[in-house]
Image (cartoon, rainbow, N blue to C red; front, side):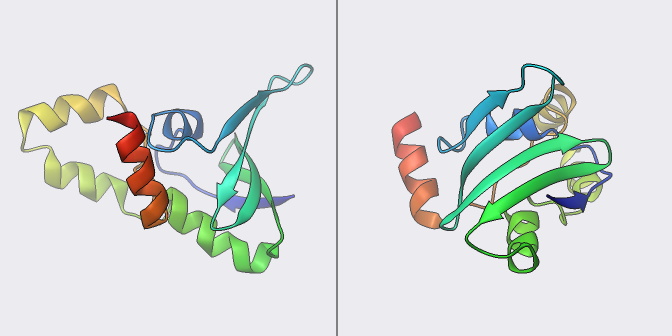
Length: 122
């Protein structure tokens, strides 16, 4: 199991269940109360959960070494989220949205997946 450290406000469940992607399945554990998500990122089957200080994950067929930067990019964990919010808070509407939906990230999906998701949600 691999780990990606992340300290900014980030809510994996809210991000994956926000309606921007439909290839994620939520799996609530019976005993330990953790929530896992299983999905596909760039032809890799990924199993991921949020834990204190970051996300724990496993992927196949790519190795952890090659998949870690892809996962960070997909979840946009390297974006300077506080700077983005600061730049956009001048707009009263957006400022309210950020307050209401703290932790949701816009996924960096494959263009085809993004297009199909957009059409299906319309």
